[in-house]
Amino acid sequence: MSKRIDVQDLNVFYGDFKAVEDVTIRVEARSVTAFIGPSGCGKSTFLRTLNRMHEVIPGARVEGQVLLDGDDLYGAGVDPVTVRSQIGMVFQRPNPFPTMSIRDNVLAGVKLNNKRISRAESDALVERSLRGANLWKEVKDRLDKPGSGLSGGQQQRLCIARAIAVEPEVILMDEPCSALDPISTLAVEDLIDELKDNYTVVIVTHNMQQAARVSEKTAFFNIAGTGDPGRLIEYSDTTEIFNNPREKSTEDYVSGRFG
Amino acid sequence: MSKQTSRAGDRIFSTTALMAGVLILVVLFSVAVFLLIQALPAFFADPSEITGGEGFWSYIWPIIVGTVIAAAIALILATPVALGVALFISHYAPRRLSQGLGYVIDLLAAIPSVIYGVWGITFLAVQLEPMYEWLAEYAGWIPIFAGPASATGKTMLTAGIVLAVMILPIITSISREIFLQTPKLHEEAALALGATRWEMIRMTVIPFGRPGVISAVMLGLGRALGETMAVALVLSTGPLILSLIQTGNSTIAAEIALNYPEAYGLRLAELIAAGLLLFIITLAVNMVARWVITRNKDFSGANA
Image: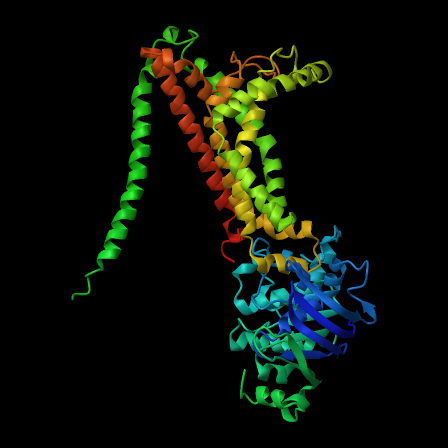
């Protein structure tokens, strides 16, 4: 488990509009990488290209290469469905399936593609995934209740449990804490810290303290102005970005002078 | 100004809303009362005076069964097609095509039922007649396809098919609206887990749309139960029989439409009593639908 991502000269489009320009970046395995930047700079758009969720939007497309341990995700004959089952995603707003119980939510990804799984195996997997998401103790007595009855923070951890149940190589998180209160945020951050032992984690965040707390490496994205494509401005160790940035705009952003 | 003073706009709006609500109840109630009063003689008349000469219930039950059979055929045929078309429009078709298709479907709903009836007798019945012959010959051992097949094609099955075509648009267009409202968030959650498009639809769109689809089907059923013109035109009515491809059977709505112009006295009361029963059946169907929808409330998606 856990693979490295190499992105080479990636351009991302919505129809004719170029949203992200010329990104080249290497995301290390078994680490947490944070994407920061002002709203609209394309960091979420870029994140969604890493598991081919970008193309779900009509007219959206990419140019360039995304290599997962050397295999091009956009190569000819690569099925986006396979890509997405290898690269899990956690969204900005918790989105457990409202029509499923907590247990079924965890198993949702595992049961795809007509996979059969025995009762004993699935019980073990549900427990392992929920423990992995630090949620087991809170929900173990109500696994058959709907997932939408949980608090926001619990729902988000349920979504993480659902993502790790399929044992992906990489977990992408798109501002996973922006809809959560500080205590739930802390719970999710602790969880991210544990996840990096087994997974490659990429997290988009608006919260710079969060990036500083959870990540080893940080990428700063920015746009020159509205209508211009977003660009990767600077990428290095998180401590470097926050204490000793090379670029002036990075320094302005992390010190709170704009954005 | 005292605290109790509410604004004029608020007062006007709440009064209007209240009156509108009360009005519906009043109308419904008066229809029910009218039907009941007018129908009473039929319930208490001497059995020998009722059409058929064996009392009201033995007069009415064959056409109740006929009504239910016609509506059931229509639903069984229309629902899968309608859901398929709705899903195609909402999740498979390219955007341009789906818009065009949507208009065409809505247009189908605007065709008056007489036209469907005329189409049913002049075209569909004729086209289906050879198929009925075939069914009678090779599938005749199944009671519902027992021969001899009607030579005109004006049978229960033809009526059911015409009804299916008539209720197709309403089920399709409501289901399409419901499917389109599936939260993007849930669809993306499924896709991000590695679901194919069909798996995504099964995991999110269908469970989310289920209550709405049930309502759509019930609306279709309501129309099928109450439809008069098409059935009156297409079906050569007769006594209740099991075979769907022979001449025979009737529905409440057709019975009323065909006999009302010449009815008076007790015969009129019989027909109105039949109408009352149709009213009760429709009410019961709607109540069952509501019960089905609320039964699984926790998992409905309304609390997402």
